[in-house]
Amino acid sequence: MTVIEDFLAHLEYERGCSINTLKGYAHDLKTLSIFLEERNIPKDERGEIDWTKVRLPDLRAFLRWLGTKRGNKISSIHRRVCSVKAFFKFLKVEGYIDENPAEDLKYPKRPASLPKFLSVEEVKKLLDSEKKNPTHQVILEVLYSTGCRVSELCHMNLEDIDLQRKQITIRGGKGGKDRIVLLSDRAANALEEYINGYRQKLVEEKKDTMTPDDLKAVFLSNRGKRISKRTVQHIVSKLSDELGIRHATPHMLRHSMASHLTMQHLNLRVLQQLLGHASLDTTQIYANVTAEHVRDEFRDKLPIS
Image (cartoon, rainbow, N blue to C red; front, side, top):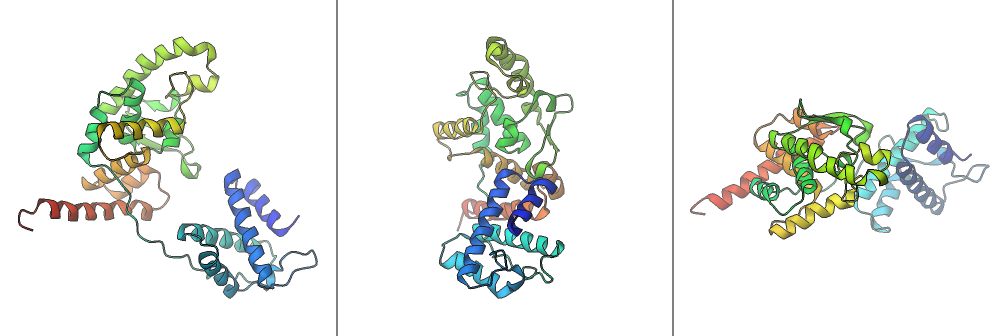
């Protein structure tokens, strides 16, 4: 087993990383190995890169090479820094190297970008539209009220819904953590009506072709199958286009919920918990959004400008 294979096994069996995460690490470290070979870093007796010979300038040169020669975006280089740091930390802990050259490796600065969100009027137009079937209506209500991710909505099961408390338990969200999201009165009413009405009728019609997983799912397609992310994305984008508002996505509804609550001075710690952010720094961006919104409102509303 190579050192990289040992590291990937550690990620899979000890840290429980997903297949996609493992593929990402494997690709990044293979790219690093190729670069170091071209930089004439010595190899060990097994023909692998001798990781004890790698120094911080080599890793900095690798990042420059990714940007200038490979044309990687800042976000891609940022991910590769994560991979390199995790790999060399593993090498140090496992005794493959005595000094960790990646310890002082800096992340590239990401350009500040504000999330796109709909105005309150645009969301209201989307939610109040009569051009949607019952499934479409309740999906829009839940996406906006809870701020959940589209993948989280598609994985919701009936047992996760607590209509009495007007809340939903998100199972295994980003980072594998569970959290509670909240329903507004209108979202809770729409969800209760959907579950006991349209969904129940659909189950009665399609139960012979439904799997046990379909029967558990909250949101079903017209064929009685657990709804897919692509279908939800299509529902939101098609309706927003039909209504003549900005082309919207499910994630824009998440951003809209977060931005609107921040404008109403919701505590950012509370918003962090509702959105399932691991770091408050991620949630902090919505404070920047509201500052930008204030500037836009000022420019639009000042009579003499």
